[in-house]
Length: 161
Image 1 (cartoon, helix red, strand yellow):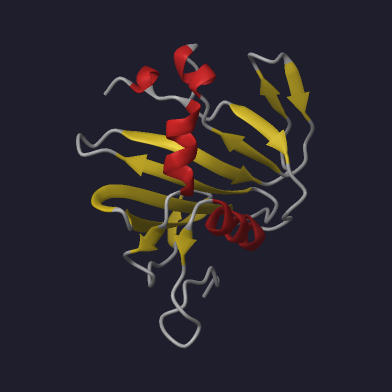
Image 2: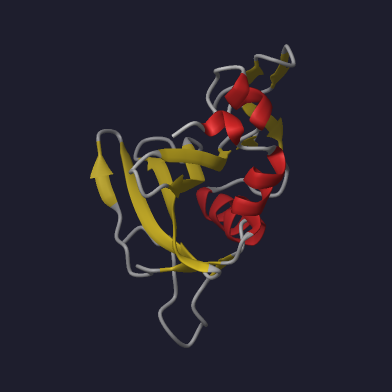
């Protein structure tokens, strides 16, 4: 798929569209030095529009985490639309030629980065809305139209049991 035709409006629309979690009882899976949970989502507006949320956290350092939203295309190709990282490393924005210090930051897919041949979500900005993997997941749900089950039904949680 040619992602270079995507505009920032297209990317914003994918991030904002209401989504339903298909597998709210997904479990943590150990992967190398971290744990990972993957949730599959469907856009309310079109059942063929699929997404995935990934949440990762280091087993040895709780400040090393990431929570992100991925668009999954029918071809199987994927595009990371947004991700929230812990403050465990600085990030360099290549196009802007600036550096985000080692603070919590979010990566946002932009048409500029796609057209320039960089990772779609190569642009990052500091954010003070969270300081934990749970907080990053909450921000992701809030910012990306992810509807969570009602508290008296199946609750999507990140508990580490």
